Image (cartoon, rainbow, N blue to C red; front, side, top):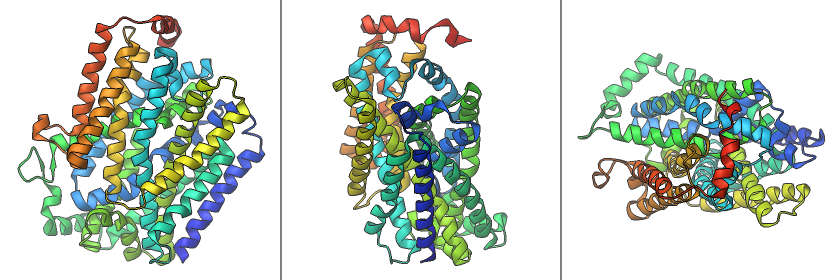
Length: 497
Protein backbone atom coordinates (compact mmCIF):
# COMPACT_ATOMS: atom_id res chain seq x y z
CA UNK A 1 0.00 0.00 0.00
CA UNK A 2 3.01 2.30 0.36
CA UNK A 3 3.32 2.52 -3.43
CA UNK A 4 -0.37 3.24 -3.87
CA UNK A 5 -0.24 5.99 -1.23
CA UNK A 6 2.77 7.65 -2.86
CA UNK A 7 1.31 7.49 -6.36
CA UNK A 8 -2.03 8.85 -5.11
CA UNK A 9 -0.16 11.68 -3.41
CA UNK A 10 1.67 12.53 -6.64
CA UNK A 11 -1.63 12.60 -8.53
CA UNK A 12 -3.20 14.92 -5.97
CA UNK A 13 -0.18 17.25 -5.97
CA UNK A 14 -0.34 17.39 -9.79
CA UNK A 15 -4.01 18.37 -9.64
CA UNK A 16 -3.22 21.02 -7.01
CA UNK A 17 -0.45 22.57 -9.14
CA UNK A 18 -2.78 22.75 -12.12
CA UNK A 19 -5.49 24.24 -9.90
CA UNK A 20 -3.08 27.01 -8.88
CA UNK A 21 -2.54 27.81 -12.57
CA UNK A 22 -6.30 27.88 -13.04
CA UNK A 23 -6.91 30.15 -10.02
CA UNK A 24 -4.10 32.51 -11.01
CA UNK A 25 -6.08 33.33 -14.15
CA UNK A 26 -3.79 31.67 -16.69
CA UNK A 27 -6.78 30.13 -18.45
CA UNK A 28 -8.79 33.31 -18.92
CA UNK A 29 -8.63 33.14 -22.73
CA UNK A 30 -7.74 30.72 -25.54
CA UNK A 31 -4.15 31.97 -25.87
CA UNK A 32 -3.56 31.38 -22.16
CA UNK A 33 -5.22 27.97 -22.16
CA UNK A 34 -3.71 26.52 -25.34
CA UNK A 35 -0.18 28.03 -25.41
CA UNK A 36 0.30 29.45 -21.89
CA UNK A 37 0.31 33.00 -23.22
CA UNK A 38 3.79 32.33 -24.73
CA UNK A 39 5.25 32.84 -21.26
CA UNK A 40 7.28 29.71 -20.42
CA UNK A 41 10.91 30.22 -19.43
CA UNK A 42 14.04 28.07 -19.84
CA UNK A 43 13.63 25.67 -16.93
CA UNK A 44 9.94 24.93 -17.39
CA UNK A 45 10.32 24.59 -21.17
CA UNK A 46 13.22 22.14 -21.00
CA UNK A 47 11.81 19.90 -18.30
CA UNK A 48 8.24 20.11 -19.57
CA UNK A 49 9.28 18.98 -23.06
CA UNK A 50 11.56 16.35 -21.51
CA UNK A 51 8.72 15.02 -19.39
CA UNK A 52 6.21 15.11 -22.25
CA UNK A 53 8.35 12.65 -24.24
CA UNK A 54 10.03 10.62 -21.49
CA UNK A 55 7.20 8.26 -20.80
CA UNK A 56 6.13 4.76 -19.87
CA UNK A 57 7.97 3.94 -23.09
CA UNK A 58 11.17 5.49 -21.74
CA UNK A 59 10.99 3.97 -18.26
CA UNK A 60 8.93 0.78 -18.45
CA UNK A 61 9.20 0.19 -22.21
CA UNK A 62 12.96 0.69 -22.60
CA UNK A 63 13.69 -1.41 -19.50
CA UNK A 64 11.51 -4.11 -21.09
CA UNK A 65 13.38 -3.64 -24.39
CA UNK A 66 16.71 -4.04 -22.61
CA UNK A 67 15.43 -7.10 -20.74
CA UNK A 68 14.15 -8.84 -23.87
CA UNK A 69 16.50 -7.58 -26.58
CA UNK A 70 19.68 -6.41 -24.90
CA UNK A 71 22.33 -3.89 -25.85
CA UNK A 72 20.99 -3.13 -29.31
CA UNK A 73 18.38 -1.01 -27.54
CA UNK A 74 21.15 1.44 -26.62
CA UNK A 75 22.22 1.75 -30.24
CA UNK A 76 18.64 2.62 -31.14
CA UNK A 77 18.68 5.39 -28.52
CA UNK A 78 22.00 6.78 -29.75
CA UNK A 79 21.00 6.81 -33.41
CA UNK A 80 17.71 8.44 -32.45
CA UNK A 81 18.67 11.04 -29.86
CA UNK A 82 22.09 12.31 -30.98
CA UNK A 83 20.75 14.06 -34.12
CA UNK A 84 17.31 14.83 -32.70
CA UNK A 85 17.98 18.23 -31.11
CA UNK A 86 19.57 19.63 -34.27
CA UNK A 87 16.85 18.21 -36.52
CA UNK A 88 14.24 19.58 -34.14
CA UNK A 89 15.76 23.05 -34.25
CA UNK A 90 16.04 23.00 -38.04
CA UNK A 91 12.43 21.86 -38.50
CA UNK A 92 10.78 23.99 -35.83
CA UNK A 93 12.59 27.32 -35.69
CA UNK A 94 10.03 28.64 -38.16
CA UNK A 95 7.28 27.11 -36.02
CA UNK A 96 8.47 29.34 -33.18
CA UNK A 97 9.00 32.49 -35.25
CA UNK A 98 5.87 32.27 -37.36
CA UNK A 99 3.80 30.96 -34.48
CA UNK A 100 4.67 34.01 -32.40
CA UNK A 101 3.92 36.41 -35.29
CA UNK A 102 0.72 34.70 -36.42
CA UNK A 103 -0.64 33.75 -32.95
CA UNK A 104 -0.80 30.06 -33.85
CA UNK A 105 -2.17 27.73 -31.18
CA UNK A 106 -2.27 24.29 -32.88
CA UNK A 107 -0.01 22.11 -34.99
CA UNK A 108 -2.42 22.29 -37.91
CA UNK A 109 -1.99 26.06 -38.23
CA UNK A 110 1.24 26.06 -40.33
CA UNK A 111 -0.13 23.34 -42.61
CA UNK A 112 -3.37 25.25 -43.06
CA UNK A 113 -1.65 28.52 -43.96
CA UNK A 114 0.77 26.78 -46.33
CA UNK A 115 -1.47 24.18 -47.99
CA UNK A 116 -5.08 25.04 -47.13
CA UNK A 117 -7.89 23.70 -44.97
CA UNK A 118 -7.96 20.15 -46.38
CA UNK A 119 -4.35 19.46 -45.39
CA UNK A 120 -4.91 21.08 -42.01
CA UNK A 121 -7.76 18.70 -41.19
CA UNK A 122 -5.99 15.65 -42.62
CA UNK A 123 -2.93 16.43 -40.52
CA UNK A 124 -5.00 16.60 -37.32
CA UNK A 125 -6.70 13.27 -38.03
CA UNK A 126 -3.44 11.51 -38.91
CA UNK A 127 -1.75 12.76 -35.74
CA UNK A 128 -4.74 11.67 -33.65
CA UNK A 129 -4.68 8.16 -35.14
CA UNK A 130 -0.90 7.93 -34.63
CA UNK A 131 -1.18 9.17 -31.05
CA UNK A 132 -3.59 6.45 -29.96
CA UNK A 133 -1.07 3.56 -29.74
CA UNK A 134 1.41 5.80 -27.90
CA UNK A 135 -1.24 6.87 -25.40
CA UNK A 136 -2.42 3.29 -25.02
CA UNK A 137 1.18 2.29 -24.28
CA UNK A 138 1.40 4.84 -21.44
CA UNK A 139 -1.94 3.86 -19.91
CA UNK A 140 -1.12 0.17 -20.32
CA UNK A 141 2.21 0.69 -18.55
CA UNK A 142 0.47 2.51 -15.71
CA UNK A 143 -2.00 -0.34 -15.22
CA UNK A 144 0.68 -3.04 -15.31
CA UNK A 145 2.91 -1.30 -12.78
CA UNK A 146 0.08 -0.41 -10.40
CA UNK A 147 -0.94 -4.05 -10.29
CA UNK A 148 2.64 -5.20 -9.71
CA UNK A 149 3.53 -2.63 -7.04
CA UNK A 150 0.26 -3.00 -5.12
CA UNK A 151 0.71 -6.79 -5.21
CA UNK A 152 -2.70 -7.19 -6.81
CA UNK A 153 -4.61 -4.89 -4.46
CA UNK A 154 -5.22 -2.62 -7.45
CA UNK A 155 -5.93 -4.77 -10.50
CA UNK A 156 -4.66 -3.91 -13.96
CA UNK A 157 -8.12 -2.81 -15.08
CA UNK A 158 -8.72 -0.61 -12.05
CA UNK A 159 -5.27 0.89 -12.63
CA UNK A 160 -6.31 1.92 -16.14
CA UNK A 161 -8.80 4.37 -14.61
CA UNK A 162 -6.83 5.43 -11.55
CA UNK A 163 -4.11 7.73 -12.92
CA UNK A 164 -5.81 8.82 -16.20
CA UNK A 165 -8.68 10.26 -14.14
CA UNK A 166 -6.30 12.65 -12.36
CA UNK A 167 -4.52 13.53 -15.62
CA UNK A 168 -7.80 14.45 -17.32
CA UNK A 169 -8.78 16.51 -14.29
CA UNK A 170 -5.67 18.69 -14.16
CA UNK A 171 -5.57 19.12 -17.95
CA UNK A 172 -9.15 20.34 -18.01
CA UNK A 173 -8.40 22.87 -15.28
CA UNK A 174 -4.93 24.23 -15.95
CA UNK A 175 -4.46 24.04 -19.71
CA UNK A 176 -0.97 24.33 -21.20
CA UNK A 177 0.54 26.31 -18.36
CA UNK A 178 -0.79 23.97 -15.70
CA UNK A 179 0.41 20.97 -17.73
CA UNK A 180 3.85 22.54 -18.22
CA UNK A 181 4.28 23.29 -14.51
CA UNK A 182 3.27 19.73 -13.62
CA UNK A 183 5.55 18.30 -16.33
CA UNK A 184 8.58 20.28 -15.15
CA UNK A 185 8.25 19.09 -11.56
CA UNK A 186 7.59 15.52 -12.65
CA UNK A 187 10.54 15.65 -15.07
CA UNK A 188 12.97 16.55 -12.29
CA UNK A 189 11.49 13.89 -10.00
CA UNK A 190 11.69 10.93 -12.38
CA UNK A 191 15.15 11.95 -13.65
CA UNK A 192 16.47 11.76 -10.08
CA UNK A 193 14.68 8.51 -9.24
CA UNK A 194 15.90 6.60 -12.29
CA UNK A 195 19.51 7.31 -11.28
CA UNK A 196 18.78 6.16 -7.72
CA UNK A 197 17.26 2.92 -9.02
CA UNK A 198 20.19 2.38 -11.40
CA UNK A 199 22.61 2.63 -8.48
CA UNK A 200 20.73 0.07 -6.35
CA UNK A 201 20.27 -2.39 -9.22
CA UNK A 202 23.93 -2.35 -10.19
CA UNK A 203 25.13 -2.64 -6.57
CA UNK A 204 22.97 -5.75 -6.14
CA UNK A 205 25.76 -7.76 -7.78
CA UNK A 206 28.78 -5.67 -6.89
CA UNK A 207 28.65 -2.84 -9.46
CA UNK A 208 28.10 -2.16 -13.14
CA UNK A 209 30.94 -4.23 -14.60
CA UNK A 210 30.34 -7.38 -12.46
CA UNK A 211 26.62 -7.15 -13.26
CA UNK A 212 27.19 -6.93 -17.01
CA UNK A 213 29.70 -9.80 -16.86
CA UNK A 214 27.05 -11.95 -15.22
CA UNK A 215 24.54 -11.02 -17.94
CA UNK A 216 27.05 -11.83 -20.70
CA UNK A 217 27.81 -15.21 -19.12
CA UNK A 218 24.13 -16.15 -18.80
CA UNK A 219 22.61 -14.38 -21.84
CA UNK A 220 25.32 -13.82 -24.48
CA UNK A 221 22.70 -13.37 -27.21
CA UNK A 222 21.65 -10.06 -25.66
CA UNK A 223 24.94 -8.60 -26.89
CA UNK A 224 24.72 -9.89 -30.47
CA UNK A 225 24.56 -7.15 -33.10
CA UNK A 226 25.17 -7.53 -36.83
CA UNK A 227 23.60 -7.62 -40.23
CA UNK A 228 21.54 -10.80 -39.83
CA UNK A 229 22.01 -14.50 -39.19
CA UNK A 230 20.71 -15.11 -35.67
CA UNK A 231 21.61 -11.73 -34.25
CA UNK A 232 19.10 -10.26 -31.79
CA UNK A 233 19.60 -6.83 -33.38
CA UNK A 234 20.46 -6.37 -37.04
CA UNK A 235 21.75 -3.01 -38.24
CA UNK A 236 18.68 -2.44 -40.45
CA UNK A 237 16.48 -3.15 -37.43
CA UNK A 238 18.40 -0.62 -35.30
CA UNK A 239 18.27 2.02 -38.02
CA UNK A 240 14.60 1.41 -38.79
CA UNK A 241 13.44 1.81 -35.19
CA UNK A 242 15.76 4.76 -34.53
CA UNK A 243 14.53 6.56 -37.65
CA UNK A 244 10.90 6.03 -36.65
CA UNK A 245 11.53 7.41 -33.17
CA UNK A 246 13.61 10.40 -34.29
CA UNK A 247 11.30 11.52 -37.08
CA UNK A 248 8.20 10.80 -35.03
CA UNK A 249 9.45 13.02 -32.20
CA UNK A 250 9.74 15.91 -34.66
CA UNK A 251 6.19 15.41 -35.93
CA UNK A 252 4.20 14.87 -32.71
CA UNK A 253 2.21 17.77 -31.16
CA UNK A 254 4.58 18.42 -28.22
CA UNK A 255 7.29 20.39 -30.10
CA UNK A 256 4.66 22.60 -31.72
CA UNK A 257 2.92 23.35 -28.43
CA UNK A 258 6.18 24.09 -26.60
CA UNK A 259 7.46 26.25 -29.47
CA UNK A 260 4.31 28.38 -29.27
CA UNK A 261 4.60 28.56 -25.47
CA UNK A 262 8.25 29.70 -25.31
CA UNK A 263 8.84 33.14 -23.87
CA UNK A 264 11.97 33.83 -25.98
CA UNK A 265 14.01 32.53 -28.90
CA UNK A 266 16.86 31.66 -26.51
CA UNK A 267 14.49 29.57 -24.44
CA UNK A 268 13.33 27.77 -27.58
CA UNK A 269 16.92 27.05 -28.66
CA UNK A 270 17.90 25.83 -25.20
CA UNK A 271 14.85 23.56 -25.11
CA UNK A 272 15.36 21.75 -28.41
CA UNK A 273 19.17 21.53 -28.30
CA UNK A 274 19.29 20.26 -24.70
CA UNK A 275 16.55 17.70 -25.20
CA UNK A 276 18.47 14.99 -27.07
CA UNK A 277 21.48 14.95 -24.76
CA UNK A 278 19.45 14.89 -21.55
CA UNK A 279 17.17 12.18 -22.93
CA UNK A 280 20.10 10.02 -24.02
CA UNK A 281 21.52 10.05 -20.50
CA UNK A 282 18.21 9.54 -18.71
CA UNK A 283 16.80 6.79 -20.97
CA UNK A 284 20.07 4.84 -20.96
CA UNK A 285 19.50 4.17 -17.25
CA UNK A 286 16.23 2.16 -17.51
CA UNK A 287 17.61 0.27 -20.53
CA UNK A 288 20.61 -0.88 -18.49
CA UNK A 289 18.31 -1.59 -15.55
CA UNK A 290 16.32 -3.90 -17.82
CA UNK A 291 19.46 -5.70 -19.02
CA UNK A 292 20.59 -6.22 -15.42
CA UNK A 293 17.08 -7.42 -14.59
CA UNK A 294 17.63 -10.60 -16.59
CA UNK A 295 19.69 -12.00 -13.70
CA UNK A 296 17.64 -10.44 -10.89
CA UNK A 297 14.12 -11.40 -12.07
CA UNK A 298 14.55 -14.01 -14.85
CA UNK A 299 11.92 -15.62 -17.05
CA UNK A 300 9.57 -12.77 -18.01
CA UNK A 301 8.05 -12.95 -21.50
CA UNK A 302 6.23 -10.50 -23.79
CA UNK A 303 4.09 -7.90 -22.04
CA UNK A 304 5.07 -9.36 -18.66
CA UNK A 305 8.54 -7.89 -19.20
CA UNK A 306 6.95 -4.42 -18.91
CA UNK A 307 6.91 -5.09 -15.15
CA UNK A 308 10.69 -5.45 -14.87
CA UNK A 309 11.25 -1.82 -13.84
CA UNK A 310 9.05 -2.23 -10.78
CA UNK A 311 10.15 -5.78 -10.02
CA UNK A 312 13.86 -4.95 -9.84
CA UNK A 313 13.03 -1.94 -7.67
CA UNK A 314 11.23 -4.25 -5.22
CA UNK A 315 14.11 -6.74 -5.34
CA UNK A 316 16.91 -4.24 -4.69
CA UNK A 317 15.47 -1.37 -2.60
CA UNK A 318 13.58 -0.87 0.66
CA UNK A 319 9.82 -0.91 0.07
CA UNK A 320 9.33 2.82 0.56
CA UNK A 321 12.23 3.74 -1.74
CA UNK A 322 11.10 1.22 -4.37
CA UNK A 323 7.70 2.88 -4.30
CA UNK A 324 9.29 6.27 -5.01
CA UNK A 325 11.39 4.79 -7.83
CA UNK A 326 8.36 3.30 -9.54
CA UNK A 327 6.41 6.51 -8.89
CA UNK A 328 9.08 8.20 -11.00
CA UNK A 329 8.08 5.96 -13.88
CA UNK A 330 4.45 6.85 -13.28
CA UNK A 331 5.17 10.56 -13.44
CA UNK A 332 6.96 9.99 -16.75
CA UNK A 333 3.88 8.23 -18.12
CA UNK A 334 1.55 10.89 -16.69
CA UNK A 335 3.46 13.79 -18.23
CA UNK A 336 3.51 12.18 -21.67
CA UNK A 337 -0.18 11.38 -21.56
CA UNK A 338 -1.06 14.93 -20.58
CA UNK A 339 1.15 16.45 -23.31
CA UNK A 340 -0.18 14.24 -26.08
CA UNK A 341 -3.83 14.31 -25.00
CA UNK A 342 -3.75 18.08 -24.61
CA UNK A 343 -2.06 18.55 -28.00
CA UNK A 344 -4.67 16.46 -29.79
CA UNK A 345 -7.58 18.08 -27.93
CA UNK A 346 -6.18 21.49 -28.96
CA UNK A 347 -5.85 20.38 -32.58
CA UNK A 348 -9.44 19.15 -32.73
CA UNK A 349 -10.81 22.29 -31.09
CA UNK A 350 -8.80 24.86 -33.09
CA UNK A 351 -8.20 23.07 -36.40
CA UNK A 352 -11.53 21.30 -36.89
CA UNK A 353 -14.27 22.82 -34.74
CA UNK A 354 -13.13 26.39 -35.35
CA UNK A 355 -12.89 25.69 -39.11
CA UNK A 356 -16.36 24.16 -39.24
CA UNK A 357 -17.86 26.87 -37.00
CA UNK A 358 -15.80 30.08 -37.39
CA UNK A 359 -18.16 31.94 -35.06
CA UNK A 360 -17.19 29.72 -32.08
CA UNK A 361 -16.19 31.88 -29.10
CA UNK A 362 -12.85 31.47 -27.33
CA UNK A 363 -14.52 30.29 -24.15
CA UNK A 364 -16.39 27.64 -26.15
CA UNK A 365 -13.14 26.46 -27.78
CA UNK A 366 -11.66 25.93 -24.33
CA UNK A 367 -14.70 23.94 -23.19
CA UNK A 368 -14.66 21.85 -26.38
CA UNK A 369 -10.98 21.05 -25.82
CA UNK A 370 -11.78 19.99 -22.25
CA UNK A 371 -14.49 17.65 -23.52
CA UNK A 372 -12.10 16.06 -26.02
CA UNK A 373 -9.50 15.58 -23.29
CA UNK A 374 -12.01 13.30 -21.57
CA UNK A 375 -13.08 11.57 -24.79
CA UNK A 376 -9.52 10.80 -25.96
CA UNK A 377 -8.57 9.51 -22.52
CA UNK A 378 -11.65 7.26 -22.36
CA UNK A 379 -11.03 5.78 -25.83
CA UNK A 380 -7.42 4.94 -24.94
CA UNK A 381 -8.47 3.26 -21.67
CA UNK A 382 -10.93 1.07 -23.60
CA UNK A 383 -8.28 0.06 -26.16
CA UNK A 384 -5.74 -0.69 -23.40
CA UNK A 385 -8.21 -3.04 -21.67
CA UNK A 386 -6.76 -6.22 -23.22
CA UNK A 387 -3.00 -5.67 -23.72
CA UNK A 388 -1.21 -7.89 -26.24
CA UNK A 389 1.67 -5.68 -27.43
CA UNK A 390 4.54 -4.52 -25.17
CA UNK A 391 4.77 -0.80 -24.38
CA UNK A 392 7.97 -0.23 -26.39
CA UNK A 393 6.61 -1.74 -29.61
CA UNK A 394 3.34 0.19 -29.34
CA UNK A 395 5.29 3.41 -28.96
CA UNK A 396 7.54 2.81 -31.98
CA UNK A 397 4.47 2.03 -34.11
CA UNK A 398 3.06 5.42 -33.10
CA UNK A 399 6.29 7.27 -33.91
CA UNK A 400 6.52 5.58 -37.31
CA UNK A 401 2.95 6.43 -38.24
CA UNK A 402 3.17 10.14 -37.45
CA UNK A 403 6.61 10.48 -39.08
CA UNK A 404 5.08 10.37 -42.59
CA UNK A 405 3.98 13.99 -42.05
CA UNK A 406 7.67 14.98 -42.08
CA UNK A 407 7.82 15.75 -45.81
CA UNK A 408 4.78 18.03 -45.72
CA UNK A 409 6.32 19.89 -42.76
CA UNK A 410 9.73 20.24 -44.45
CA UNK A 411 8.09 21.38 -47.69
CA UNK A 412 6.01 23.97 -45.88
CA UNK A 413 9.05 25.65 -44.38
CA UNK A 414 11.88 25.01 -46.85
CA UNK A 415 10.66 24.26 -50.37
CA UNK A 416 8.86 26.93 -52.35
CA UNK A 417 7.78 24.35 -54.94
CA UNK A 418 5.81 22.28 -52.38
CA UNK A 419 2.13 21.91 -53.30
CA UNK A 420 -1.05 21.00 -51.52
CA UNK A 421 -1.49 17.93 -53.72
CA UNK A 422 1.99 16.59 -52.95
CA UNK A 423 1.54 17.15 -49.20
CA UNK A 424 -1.86 15.48 -49.03
CA UNK A 425 -0.94 12.50 -51.21
CA UNK A 426 2.33 11.81 -49.42
CA UNK A 427 0.63 11.87 -46.00
CA UNK A 428 -2.23 9.61 -47.08
CA UNK A 429 0.06 7.15 -48.87
CA UNK A 430 2.43 6.95 -45.90
CA UNK A 431 -0.32 6.35 -43.36
CA UNK A 432 -2.14 3.98 -45.72
CA UNK A 433 0.95 1.82 -46.20
CA UNK A 434 1.65 1.72 -42.46
CA UNK A 435 -1.90 0.54 -41.79
CA UNK A 436 -1.75 -1.97 -44.67
CA UNK A 437 1.52 -3.48 -43.45
CA UNK A 438 0.09 -3.77 -39.94
CA UNK A 439 -3.08 -5.49 -41.19
CA UNK A 440 -1.14 -7.85 -43.47
CA UNK A 441 1.84 -8.74 -41.31
CA UNK A 442 1.05 -7.39 -37.85
CA UNK A 443 3.46 -5.46 -35.68
CA UNK A 444 6.43 -7.51 -36.93
CA UNK A 445 6.02 -6.23 -40.47
CA UNK A 446 5.88 -2.64 -39.28
CA UNK A 447 8.79 -2.88 -36.83
CA UNK A 448 11.23 -5.49 -38.13
CA UNK A 449 13.18 -5.81 -41.43
CA UNK A 450 11.35 -7.74 -44.15
CA UNK A 451 12.95 -9.48 -47.11
CA UNK A 452 9.92 -8.57 -49.23
CA UNK A 453 10.64 -4.88 -48.48
CA UNK A 454 14.37 -5.00 -49.38
CA UNK A 455 15.27 -5.66 -45.73
CA UNK A 456 13.48 -2.52 -44.57
CA UNK A 457 10.81 -2.52 -41.90
CA UNK A 458 7.29 -1.45 -42.79
CA UNK A 459 7.79 2.03 -41.33
CA UNK A 460 10.85 2.83 -43.46
CA UNK A 461 9.20 1.43 -46.60
CA UNK A 462 6.15 3.64 -45.91
CA UNK A 463 8.33 6.66 -45.13
CA UNK A 464 10.37 6.31 -48.34
CA UNK A 465 7.21 5.81 -50.42
CA UNK A 466 5.71 8.89 -48.77
CA UNK A 467 8.79 10.92 -49.72
CA UNK A 468 8.73 9.74 -53.32
CA UNK A 469 5.05 10.59 -53.63
CA UNK A 470 5.66 14.02 -52.09
CA UNK A 471 8.37 15.05 -54.54
CA UNK A 472 6.72 13.51 -57.59
CA UNK A 473 3.35 14.97 -56.64
CA UNK A 474 4.82 18.43 -56.15
CA UNK A 475 6.68 18.35 -59.46
CA UNK A 476 3.64 17.15 -61.38
CA UNK A 477 1.27 19.75 -59.95
CA UNK A 478 1.37 23.51 -59.89
CA UNK A 479 1.15 25.58 -56.69
CA UNK A 480 -2.32 26.98 -56.24
CA UNK A 481 -3.45 30.35 -54.95
CA UNK A 482 -2.97 29.38 -51.30
CA UNK A 483 0.56 28.04 -51.83
CA UNK A 484 1.57 31.11 -53.86
CA UNK A 485 0.16 33.49 -51.26
CA UNK A 486 1.90 31.65 -48.41
CA UNK A 487 5.38 32.13 -49.88
CA UNK A 488 5.57 35.76 -48.75
CA UNK A 489 5.03 34.61 -45.17
CA UNK A 490 6.94 31.31 -44.99
CA UNK A 491 9.97 32.53 -46.97
CA UNK A 492 10.19 36.08 -45.69
CA UNK A 493 13.81 37.28 -45.57
CA UNK A 494 13.59 37.92 -41.82
CA UNK A 495 13.25 34.15 -41.24
CA UNK A 496 16.69 33.45 -42.69
CA UNK A 497 18.61 35.73 -40.34
